[in-house]
Image (cartoon, rainbow, N blue to C red; front, side, top):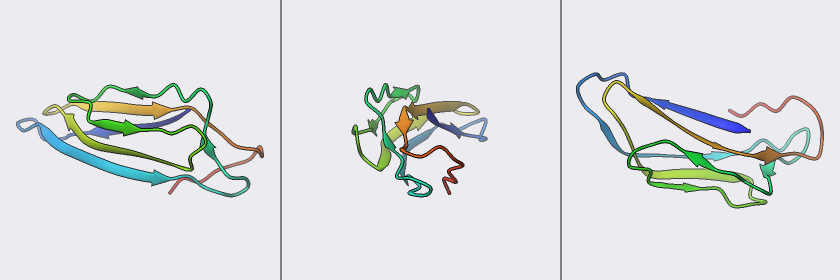
Length: 88
């Protein structure tokens, strides 16, 4: 499982329009979204959490994070080779 925790340190203002994309590492083997992907998104509003089976990327657009709070998005991933994968 690949998980991202998005934190809003501002205690007074919620965040809106939160967005990011992530391209998975390709070494030591190409990591991709697994089948089943089983995506989870706890952001509110959720926005769009794009997790396509077999893809090497994921993206989140239009999400919200409450003031002083956080949300989590996650997805199952797989890779053909056991090893350490640095997702930078």
